Image (cartoon, rainbow, N blue to C red; front, top):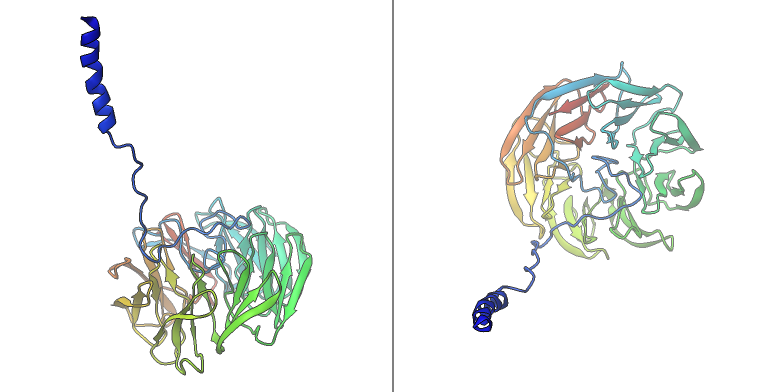
Length: 397
């Protein structure tokens, strides 16, 4: 009898277990153009370690930007102009060079942490923070490796006349000077260099996701850093920036001469083949755009009064009017929520407009008393804005 009862007790349990779903849940399917994180072991894991936040220059942060849209603090640098962008360390310390010879570290509350007073000479290039904490500063007199406490680790003398700099996955530093691409290792030793007349005084070099190709603006140049040779070129030499996505596709403005005689926004594949192109209004300057996690592109041009968003295939998603009269000359940045930050230059002042990823105007911080022109940096619920030709750094919360 006990065996019979045990049988009737076990059978339903077996039937229930056998009817349960045993397969694993289906993996999440990302939309076309979804941007995966690109590992870069040589770069510091901080809120904003370099210009454009990463070697691909997409201006996209993994952190949320300001939520309120008001001024938190202003740091004034005693009439010394700050004309490069800033970087942010792991403890939220803000680092910035200033024009007439020096380098400053600012606490997260806007107070001065330390200042290098020795003559570093004029500079307009954004620093890079490496994974070991070293801060690489590019001045017209050469490259400085600076420790977190403000002491100088080493100095490499060379005249630097272009603000473009980058770091590869091994921690080697790249910069262009006198039409020459130079590469230093982390000890400050010159590894190799390559001279080319097309390496002009242009901005914002970018790396491919695998770290093997450096893209140089001007005449768009794909440079193979393994074989140290040019792979291909595009355009006639008027480009200032290149944005690279996680698939290795490129986004840039150029006048190609053959494909288009107008200022055009292009996207190409890693081999330089055109994916799509979009003619821009006039031949006006277009500051570097930003890209969100879904591969949507956000940009503005000097000649228009709007901000635009394109999807990954280059189709217009929306166009939103600027909330005030002025010009957009500063690179755009975006945060983890897809909010886009746009700086509008006015006469002796600028506004910061915040848009949602769908084009809704969320907030405006108006009439900051200076000129910007340099890329802002996103920190924890904060936007750090250098004042360009002014002597201030602003923090928006």
